[in-house]
Length: 232
Image (tube, rainbow, N blue to C red; front, side, top):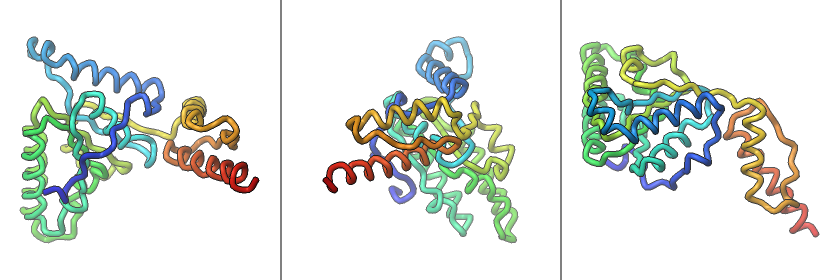
């Protein structure tokens, strides 16, 4: 079973993830609602526990899932979709059912990265359409029965590939885009603050993802350290 997901990963604090104002507000609203779910449920109000994150690669979707797990003090399961979405569709349904059952008892965060690997199963080159329908129905039933004290997060950079019936199961859909200049400026400053002042001189590049900006900082800072220390 452990081959189907990753866990015991280094935690990420929400403060380490940089959002624009709109996205930050949505994340905080979700946390407030989930944190106070008992009182909301006492009024028979539904509490969101299924998030869908979509947008460009490297813009913080996985970091956000980890940060939410840390903030809510929950274990996170990052699903290895290549192990679950088997070419043998019968195994796919079985693997999915086993995974959801495992998470159900742990009050955890279940994070499906590259969710389009599940959502686009209708495009599989397979003549057994009844089997494909069974897999999709299995997913829908598992999502519908997902426990309220756990959190389900799906993520993709190809939302157009995902079946609408699957997307409708998620309470909140958040788009992650290339961060604007002012947000990247803050991100650069936060990253560079980890190093002595003499190593912080870099040419900041904009209109790129957080992942690309992070790699840029690491590359330039390493060059600065080598230039100033090793080559004295």
